[in-house]
Length: 252
Image 1: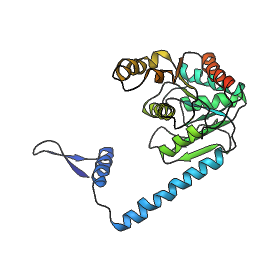
Image 2: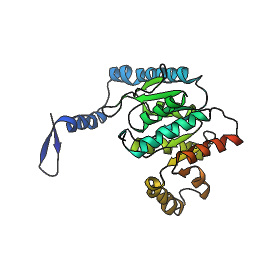
Image 3: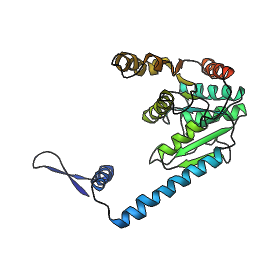
Image 4: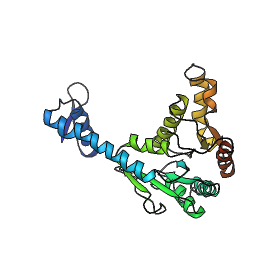
């Protein structure tokens, strides 16, 4: 149990999750001993390397794939879930496998659609305290566990020939912005990014135009880095049209 100061002369006892957060904040300001630096920080490098190696080895021969992102909280009864299943199935019909975050919700729908279409179904899972667990539609040997978000994002970008982004929360936005930033800055070759659900994405896209663009934070060309659609047919058609012009290849 820890005491948290709440204004002049007052304290509050922190318990449960609040206590854990408080401890993490306090520990981040503590000076590390030599032993802590060697045993934790230095050896962490090897753990990071091991995750990269494991990911590269398992993904090296999967062939061209499209990643599908979206909320883990989406219910199977939601129309977005069924739409993701349909998109994934149609993606496999044009020769692509499907990569997802491996968990429930939209991720499960993506793997389910890939399974229905007879294509490769890959899951890149992340160890989280809530929500995340492998779904049952991932191909045997093509499920990978990650501890680090940044390594997982590298694998997504490296082995994807396109991103299909369904409605989702902070994690979905993180993956979307990572891809847009890497393409915008020419760190990777361009690939199609499809946002599914014009109503859901309208607020964010309006902010891009009315705030970022008008403030000079992005250029007019940056608004062409993604396509907004509402149907499975349009989502898959955009991926197909892109690769009718360009040879399918890994990004780096």
